[in-house]
Length: 234
Image 1 (tube, one colour):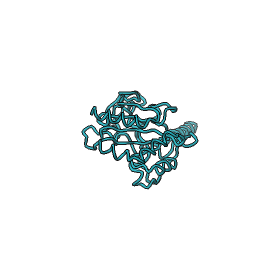
Image 2 (cartoon, one colour):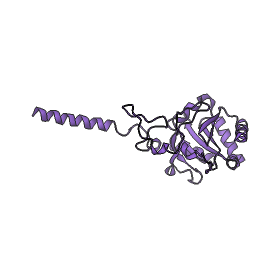
Image 3 (cartoon, one colour):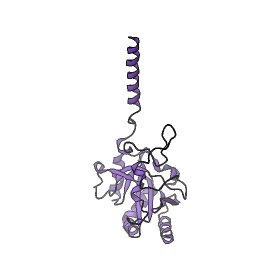
Image 4 (spheres, one colour):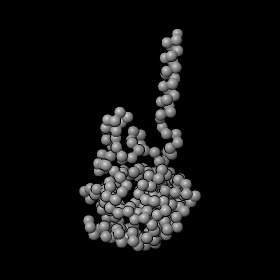
């Protein structure tokens, strides 16, 4: 009887541990990775130190090591957002997975030479000014024809807290954003910049996913000049 009791206790404890080690109950559904994937493109070692199988989402992405400094290969960050907020009518129900691998273009088949990653916050006046410039001047359409893809992100709401999907929807609707846009709830792009230097703009060579320029601050004219200069090098 004692043996049976110990067996039952072991099974109960094991079941509780399994339940606690399952899905992250604190994570937000719209910002979770797909089942079976590591959090970011930062490695694949298992608990025993052995290399695990390369996940599908890394199969079409440059191998590491990855980093957030100049000339590093940027990790394959993954978010929830819109590939075209305008086409989705800024609807949070139409948010979909967006990852940097979507813009990786080693052979030029996607027509992307440079990926511009913009990080903004709802409380940030220079961020609003930059997006107002994009909207007024048709900046995205102008540069898309030259092989530049924009990826916008919102990393804080008006209170300086992590943004919800509704915050992202309000932002893209306000500026009629027609380029890919994501809600950076977990501040994944934070390694690219200092919080006091937003909006931050990161230029990435889409052929290699190498970070080729980091542009903190709200100098929109300087940003566009930097893009022009980088295009001349390609």
